[in-house]
Length: 243
Image (cartoon, rainbow, N blue to C red; front, side, top):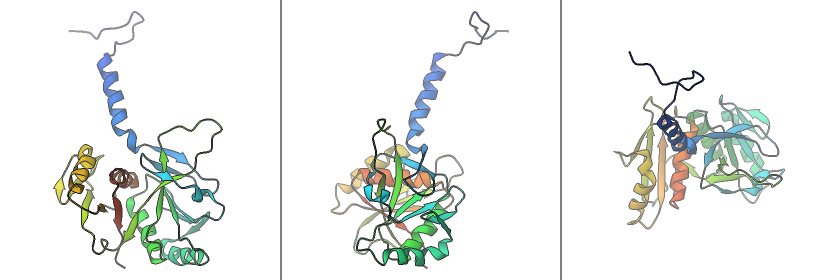
């Protein structure tokens, strides 16, 4: 019988290769980690981490319109709890006195995408066709330095933009950690998403991606796809119910 090698202290020896493998896996899944973030006011949630979000300093203004979706699916307009059914009228009222129709969605990365779709549908009915999804970033801010919120603008609607030649990206629940990813019904590896999109866009005048995702998937997976699409300069269109 062979016994595992031990240090002089009697502790089992662990091969260096296993540590290297763990580090590699950590880096591979790092883009989808979440960090707890809150703006100056509002409900605290864990936001999905992105690389291509842009600064949204107006989201930190006192009168900014922010809809939050918690891990459990609870919805808040500002700090007030609200049902998705009542959200459309509330948002419409909040926008009635504004010339710029900006609305920010702060959704927990772990909540099922179906919870976020209900909110997207409600704000669309209120007249908001380009909400901004607030996200967290990988960079660590310098001590004492104020970093503005960042987000990704998306388009929403019951169907693809009229007249636009869209590339359809689908996320299908596989029961595994990673969903099945398709571009125009063709299965592709997750690592190939950006390169495949750039290849398709070389022969197109418009860069529009229609994202369709299973409602059971964590919102972080959908945000990851949106983030990759935005890295190519594409507009992202999220399909909401036709009701």
